[in-house]
Image (cartoon, rainbow, N blue to C red; front, side, top):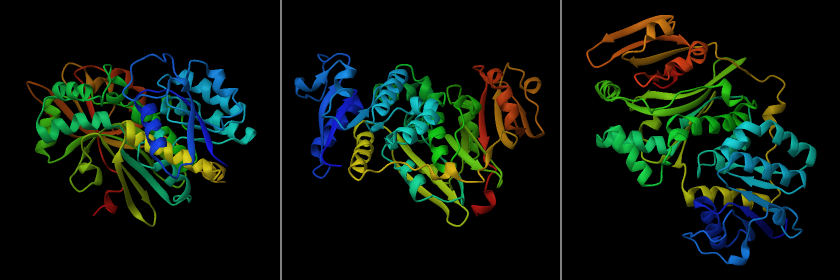
Length: 403
């Protein structure tokens, strides 16, 4: 491909970062020629030539001068419309919309095949960490056992302030919002949905299988209590919001997002503040660790730039693992060991534990630790949403490999 002429959709924090890194990158051989926004007159930190701005989607999609669309808008429905229309017209796309991708990836993968057009989205999962392309290229084999990590910087920042600085949860959340790590409505991050959507995308490239978000157990940190933090400190562990996809046999894998008790010997124990950390485990190479900023203007923009430069060499995802003859199937029929803290909610009537390992009844709160099927948590997840309930995973996978 000769010089890349970019039509950019979105000029918020990330869009402005892209504008900056494309201008600074000497070898990118790329230029932003049009920027589609809702309000061209809106005050912005980065000043761009006003002639670049348009409010018309068609002005970009109909332009014969534009050979790459870059989409970084907040509205997943609008993002889907832009990405699909671009691909139908044969225009390659770079997207950062994790929500849109997690919901529509099978259709968009099929569009890539039928229209012979590329869709790249490394920035959608873990910001500056190139996890998608590494899974696609370096880990292109069936020896991969697990991808696990901290995929959301906002929740990790909050938990870091709680554990490393002894701040109350409410204060840590307020500080994350003040610094721009969390939105005024932080539920997307702290309830685990951001991590969930990233995990859906990662799993396609890790194991070659798409699992719809609603089929995956997801539990966040919004109900964490002082008693949970105190319990974790007494045990010498931290609580982290962890997403994971795990091969549990040659035939099956499972995946979930929930808080986890993380011991000091684990890589992600030391991933703090707004950083992300991803552990990739394989049959022959044990564990490999990737660390970096998972969000923010310039980290995300640098990942977008990587995809832009990949298009210079006509790069596209091949989805080789989706063509494997024997792919593992998704299952929730596996046993987890969990900690459940509660007060008023009748947990013992709601959840059926295969085995109870520890119980505590106190004045302030109660907890139970036991073995339970993931399918049972899925079935009862609506009943676990009380403000007096908090749930955390106690890891059981691959413990024998970590000694």
